[in-house]
Length: 341
Ligand SMILES: [Zn+2]
Image (cartoon, rainbow, N blue to C red; front, side):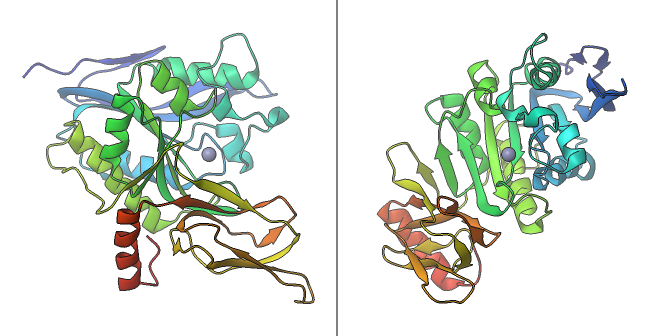
């Protein structure tokens, strides 16, 4: 078999069989010091696809950091066919501040791709990341969590109308795929539109390492590696049941109509039936309780964690299930009622 090729970026080169840990400058601080992101490039001896794994584009979304680090440092990659570009912390300024957005003007790095050399600070950072480490890749996975105060069951977001993106999304083997093109400037959207098929994996809540979700995501990465032949030891994972939530499916963020303190009656991943009580909103005196019921039967993909709301704040993300999928989930959840899927 022919040897793999070297991976090159602006300022360096990683030969086949070589691993490099790089701190790559993408901007400068007020003091003129470099802002550098950690990048690990693992170039296998055997040829194969070049793949990026990235996390913390929102600086307080931590679960994905551990996924990327464990693939880079704890997996035996001696048989790797292809190249991995591992970026555990994309948004270093926001990570240092433990907040979602870039601290300067609260810019969203994940609305700034593919970036620009001459535009805002966020777009310049995005440009250096994109040109050097995303554009050279054949495909990639960007890890996120829910926004602060909420939590998600693990799911994939992908544009399923693009066959290459759909192949990647299916290979990850999650129960739930939300089919959407994504907003302008989102890493997976811009990469997919420019020849690097990409998916977002949403998992859990901000500011946490959640072991069971990290393990679930690692199984997804292993399954993707099997699908594309990066590792001979892996096999493609079938999750048992899967639902693709398309634009046609009913899905909604249920919002509070009154302010108060929220008693959530279900975990993320629970199946609720039409009319079931999802949560109760109470006042400090525990009178005038407002009960929020499910408007249709579906899966609670995301729920509130921080139990306080103003009117208009989201309570939960409910998605419709097809009848055959619903029956499988019902069987699964009645077999182990305490375990969120
Ligand atoms: Zn995010």
